[in-house]
Length: 94
Image (cartoon, rainbow, N blue to C red):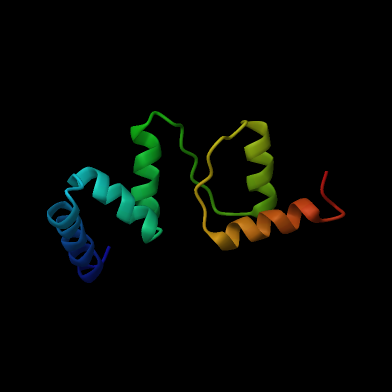
């Protein structure tokens, strides 16, 4: 992370602690989801004992892996979900 993002993220964690009484680690996880910072979100899954798979995103491959491994949580952005839905609706889908 470049310094500006790191500093602003850190200050927002302090602000949430002081203003709302949200403990730092919880504020950190919440802000990670709000700003779509993948590392923060991945750490949340790992902290809860979930296996984590990192891959170059290909919609068809993602759908195949989700089905094969019976994935119950997916970390992605809206564009990824749209691509996956387009693949699933394709006449070439299995």
